[in-house]
Amino acid sequence: MTVQHVVLFKFPEDCGPELLDELREKVRAWPGVLPGIEVLRLGADFTGERTRGHQLLLYTEFGSKETLVAYQTHPHHQAFLSWVRENGGAPLAFDYVLDDSTVFVDRE
Image 1 (cartoon, rainbow, N blue to C red):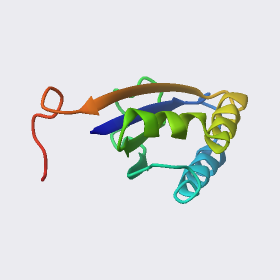
Image 2: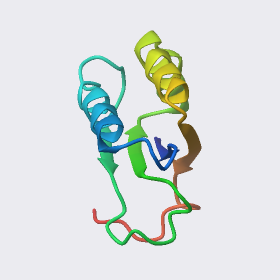
Image 3: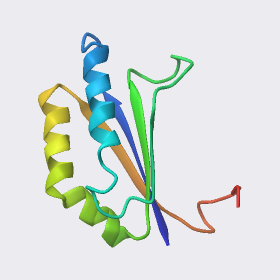
Image 4: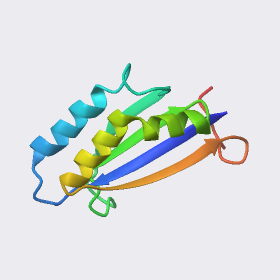
């Protein structure tokens, strides 16, 4: 089973590019530190439209719900989440299982 974890990050409009760069660096350090991440992507919308103020999207995949929970409860992830909130960030997360009821087209 694969579980997809998607997070949209919204920070105050005046946060500046340095804060978003710092977030990118924090996420870039996750492989080898946070357990169970099979896919890790982070990006900004290139159109600048329809984002409702969200600046970045985090996309991750895990092998099971238990692996996702281990990632979410890990002290390193908890420290990251605290940093996001301390800097005015409002993360919006969505988790779901990839299966026949959720995947309609796949590259494989």
